[in-house]
Length: 221
Image 1: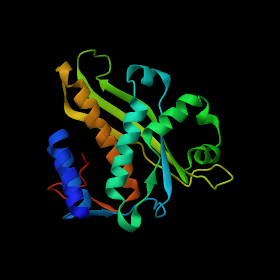
Image 2: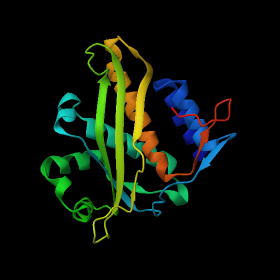
Image 3: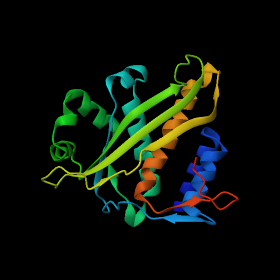
């Protein structure tokens, strides 16, 4: 049943994002001649995770709903990959968005307080230092460029220190070639959000990284 659900998700990616993302989905879950990568952090079974997105006001002004969209995508990927004895619960993205709107200084509060306010065992804080769908300096050339950093906090940690944090930033450039087709901007943004969510979610699950024909690691998607 799990494989059936995952294949359905991969098929959805094939339609929505294209062959590269679908190809990554198949590789990441069932592999082939690739490098096995273990989860960097294993969330306890049935624990509750709150995914919170930090984006500065300029990003939120240019891309309304960015925090809700990206948090929703990460939640969906985590539900897809963490099943059975690895399954977790997530706080709804809309619940978190309302909390952020009603608590404008949430990012300066202790993470343990925020987690308890949300009924979560952990907070995954994703910061976005770059988020754009246009080429720098170009108003009509479209290509998403996103950078994210992530930290995981345990609600029971009295020192408010992350129990895990990304050593490297998560990068997405999509599509590979920029386009002048303005009508594609919304689609490009949605697809790039999916790709970024995938990169973040697979931190918490064992997966494989494929190799190219010359044996070097291939960056996906």
